Length: 493
Image (tube, rainbow, N blue to C red; front, side):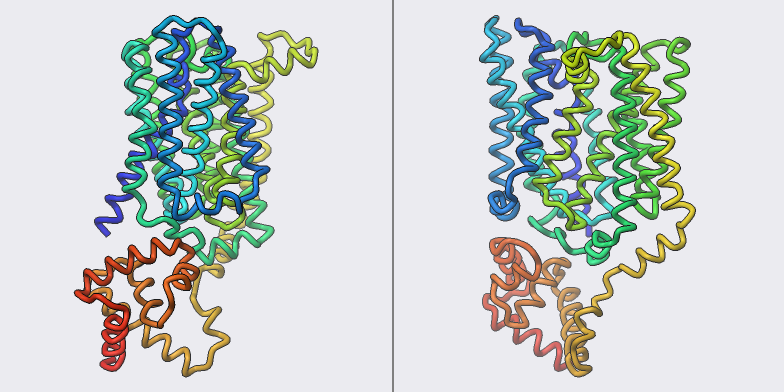
């Protein structure tokens, strides 16, 4: 248990380094001193993320299947290397005073490609967590990312150079976190069953829609003063912004830990966002811009990460692959980031819109607040007013391990029970982890390494790694020795 918690803490910190790269000042620090127009580079960055996300959605998961299992670590390291190369290229070009746009665009494309690979790798890694851990871990990583974000108070040149360490540290900690690859990709029968229920699908769509609309509302509010971190000067007010953001992250963490279901957590968090944005919109001309911008930025950023948690649950529920989840997140992240900077205003101008720029933020904010209120009512009706029925449905879908046994004879059921009881005793005696106990159980039944991997939905290399650990802890060297110990334990039952 202690090792598991330690792995989760390490993984949360690594995820924090990755989330720190999603903060607008991360990119702003790179391009603020570059000679080409920074807004063009920001537009290229957001647009490239959207295009890459779309490509991931259209790609065939089978092509990337090897990367989603035994080669996830090497894939992540490639992502870190490409990201770091893009960061360093932009920094070097700015230092040398190069004023050609093409090499900067190359650096931006490398940065986007690396971030996309890291996004996919982290969505795949989040599948190693239990369903109830997804939101708390991501929100806790968000808080950690804002502690790391205090580097923004450093001079831009220094902060930009330090940014190249973010992807490397993120992957380094990823490789030490969350246990073996594929630990719980399809381990929850309740999640698999819920993914097939129309009611649960409607609830998931509403929870994601509510948070997305809240984020868009925050992006419109931020468009009044934010420019993606571009033109930002390090100041003491930065500390206030990150403290407020971290406070919202802690609040969301507590809500996600206390909520009975992710839908209830989303409804509560969406309510906090709705109230916060309404107050901010009403108080826009009354509160100091430093305080107002800190509140809006904190809500916007925390909601964005909570949305990432909702998307990650698609993977764990078996509805979508990690590749698909990464594509969706990249598209939505690029979209809401672009609203703050240039993409949507550019599209409005291209379509010949006559809307004055000063009306852009108020119109989007009001529309977002109205939509949030409407979606909140629907989600309230689906979850809160039918809470007992909803929780009862979840309880009925809990994995009972009886579905497979119903087709077996009483003698087979008794044999299975004796086997599992023996494995529980052996696991306690030799200090086997839960995953090692499951692996040992299948090995003791005579399963091959390939079949054990299929049963646990992991790579064969993962099974081999578990086997070595099991043999070491039990002081044995061969499969038949394990079978003999299990048979002796069964005989003594």
